[in-house]
Image 1 (cartoon, rainbow, N blue to C red):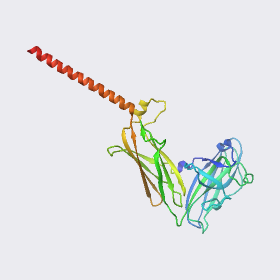
Image 2 (image 1 turned 90 degrees about the vertical axis):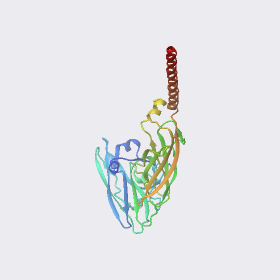
Image 3 (image 1 turned 180 degrees about the horizontal axis):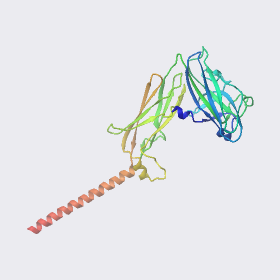
Image 4 (image 1 turned 90 degrees about the horizontal axis):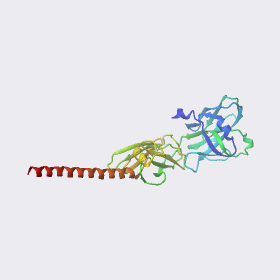
Length: 325
């Protein structure tokens, strides 16, 4: 998973005035994500690779920022200026050359940075990163404005008196309904982090049918998305058997993604260094009404044919015996 992430470029919406859209698409960074566990007094050094994929020279300015979780529960960071103090901020511990980076067409540059945790650094989670802007820091008046931005996200765990505690805030169905005519059934689970360190809840949702047999096991949080302290993150997952194509008829949808009866969904999530576990359950129904109607009509037709056949056999028997007499 981490190898895939190392080759991705994250485009993040911030609160300020940064690179325009065309410029953002022209620059990529690798890796876009860092996660460290350090002790007070430790230092770690690493490199961010910046690429210019255009045919024109580009200049970008590395800027340290902090972030918290956004209000949309989607895991998109809510960045704020390094000048705004917060005990969970990381930017004050990040050091790197502040010189602008000018890249020729097709050129790559490495930005070396270090993170130093002071001896009195607070235990728990600290969150920040380095963004790359086409606007010099002095022209931004210390704000983190609105625009599309490349950012290298950094999560830091400082050892000490750390609390890892979370719970499932809600487990339900996307759209709210509990009765379906066919799969997929779209679930969501909202995990609340009540501790002092980010966690990555991962696990499975187990689907059982009316007689207790397991119909499916679905992985939850396959992207390993983190939940920051004092925040909630929403994860989506689906139970389906085949691709549901909108233009298909309802009959084909029910046939391709067949389900019937009452089901129970049990989500089991594990998180934290100690492997804490939380669970939640929901029930739902699947009634493929078109298939059920067709099945009923077919059953009635078959019963009619059997009745007619039996009547024909009886009539032949009676006729045969009558002739003998």
